[in-house]
Image 1 (cartoon, rainbow, N blue to C red):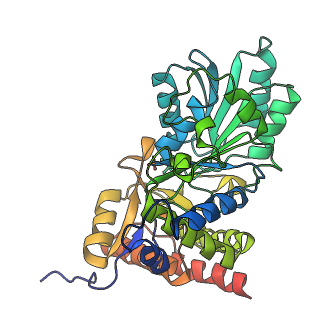
Image 2 (cartoon, rainbow, N blue to C red):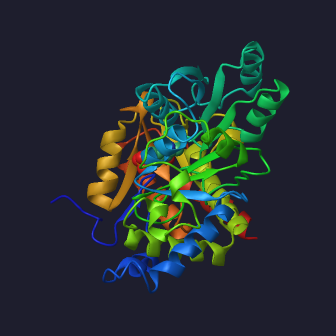
Length: 396
Ligand SMILES: *Cc1c(COP(=O)(O)O)cnc(C)c1O
């Protein structure tokens, strides 16, 4: 007989789609309403009123019926023209995929890649932009926290690099993983376009792509050559018929769901949320550091100031991450995130984004520790004890 400890609520510690709160599920479980009258109209207004605050901007948000990829395409097609050069700053696989989309859609892509496990060096960006005397780079694209590597880029420092070169390129930041999980200040940090999605820190099922466009982005929009009718910002005017904000029938359940999630975020408070994620992420990092042993696990993001708070990427050393994940999932009821990019088969991820509390994180860490012990893996010490100490200190 093989012992199973999996019979209870399953925990998904994958970096999206993340856990959807019961309140949000309930909000979307209702019959389809008339889309021209009733509840849907004020709820749609609330959605568009509240979204700017999530990115800390006075600029409006556009909502794409789609996932993060849809938001990527909406951002590019509304601001750029075929043949424009974009500089993509890569510290993980998601920036690469955004770059591939840019290439496919007719942009000239130039990559700058960070050292493994490290953020982009802002000085290197400043140097590159200083040599672009003809100002051929029209936009700089990066992920705030790349969900594959869990590395966080220093967005204000990248902005400063643009300013130091007095370079007019648009700054576009993918915050799909970080929004609602870590400090992000679109206006204060001088970001022109912010990209988000519903299903990570924002606790809503996948299906809404989000794009916030600042003044410089809207100015670029007026001459952008890649615009297509479906994604076009101009026809999604807030003062037009409300269904045009979605270019057609609204994603009704998602509108109700997202508004409920945004109410929950407001009740908790954005700063409180960031503090919660910081504490939980700190607990996970302390656990991994304590587990570390020769040939054992280690944190992929090596520099503490560059470790993102929504997710932790772990190198697994001599430990087979597939075997570890199989024990966690099939015998204990916890699903871990897979390693992506250069960590396929040599790493895994623990997500702690959105609707996540202390027992969930401690439960996931305890399960990983038990699985490591069951495999006879090299373990330096009790990561669970270290994590509890971090949370205890945070609560004191
Ligand atoms: C999840 C994620 C994406 C992709 O989002 P999809 O909804 O899968 O299209 C892009 N960038 C980052 C940083 C992400 O975390």
